[in-house]
Length: 156
Image (cartoon, rainbow, N blue to C red; front, side):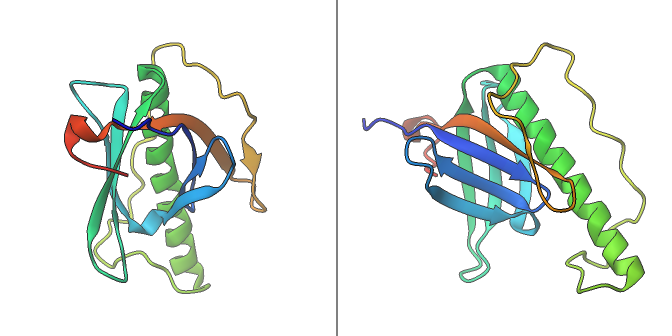
């Protein structure tokens, strides 16, 4: 079996990028509006995934990753949840102010969801400080390994 590359996963309210940890090249980039869900594997908590939709082909793709430890995977899933919430709130604000076209569907409930809880365990801090974009939103990098092909039959 070929060696699985180590990547840096960058999560923000705009979307997710995965970057080759060796040469820093962007491998893939997914806008938050094209990510339909994210979850941790209940049997292997260091493994998590998210599903994207390719707008050109209308195909869905599942991207599976294995983090260095369970706590890191948990923190990444929480960060993705917070990114969805921030993107949702920004879309609501854009709709209310009439600025730009909102990608928020009419069927979305306008009530804010509950805040994402903080983990109850110690979590390894990222080696890098989160970078801030022009609006002051954090862009958090994580180092993860994509899930093994044989494990789930899904390749990233």
